[in-house]
Image: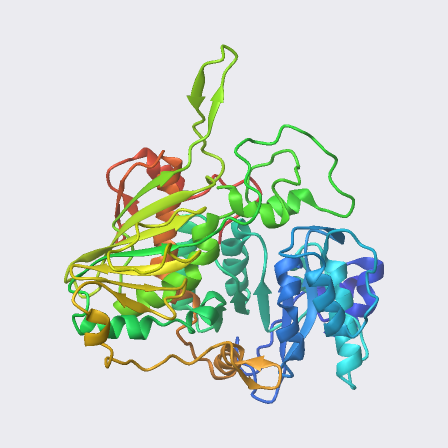
Length: 515
């Protein structure tokens, strides 16, 4: 059996009968019909990389889809209930309904996660809902072991912390795997752009899930009003969110709790430099650290910015500056001073980007606000305050105010512009989360067709080029104490601060390679 493993001739069934005793095998990619090609009659076999709160929250649409079969799951965490969730027991209760087990995990405190949890959910659902399915799936720490040993994996879904996205994606491209990923492409500018470059050159089908909600945007109506001259020349765009809604830590943890049993801290760190374990780094809280996350703008900005960049045909930022909430502490002499924080995102921040039109006809300023910050209320706006999350387009003669995705937009300004342009209507966009078949949303149906036909669509990774480049430039401005940075997207260099260029990429830990 040792020789057979080494030769790499295991099928998925053979793999399942041997992994418990002796470990993992060797990959032989599906190649009879060409690398990456899936016959239309075949199921797409998928490995789920990342089994935390968000991954489990989204597992239902993959399980319900008859054209996809999850054949393995991977996560450095075996199993725990210390994940941060949006409401008490919401994830557990949703999973109970999914697998039809109303008493599952009764009495737990916190939220479940880890590879053994996802393995149980996948197997239980398939056993109850697919009459011909009577097996089990492997659950391993490192997805690379699985992909090296199962020969017929077609695709991966990437649901890791942000700092691993670009590494997993480029590695899976090299292995010939189709992909679905949650935002962002990467939390360092050059890492994210490497994924863009590889995706652009690859025939493999990819999908960035942020496109799903973006399709519900009201940006077409906004664009129609702008083109009709309702607000005059567009000067600025504002977008704001209530994020962060996870704990932020202005100090580097000094406590040294033990690494939880069943959690591979070294593997979770991946390319990041070694440091002591802390629960303040992991699970949902990773988003607040420059090393592991990409802040509120990457968490939510992908959703709201994609339709704006696409509709107005905006290029990558050529400048970025930031303002942010500052932390002040007293030193031993009881003298207050600002903490110069280069390790975590602030509780609240405002970014200002200059975005050129791809047509070469000038530029517009895009302003992002988070942590409760909002722009000033425009003249003529009748409410007491702007919505908790929203978007605003400021022109020379008025403004357009909508919700976070620019939905329900309203014309605001003098001279009765709302009534004057009431007849200007635009076509609505196809809702990508709408179900087109039982259990299959439109975006997933499109991705499946792309996998089988070797096509791409607007949800492919490479179409987030400008947003990925822009928000990562903003993160560098934050780390440079808000300095305005000038950037050349053609050379991918900051032109007015050589030291800031060091922040374009990661100081990768020895033993990790960015392919």
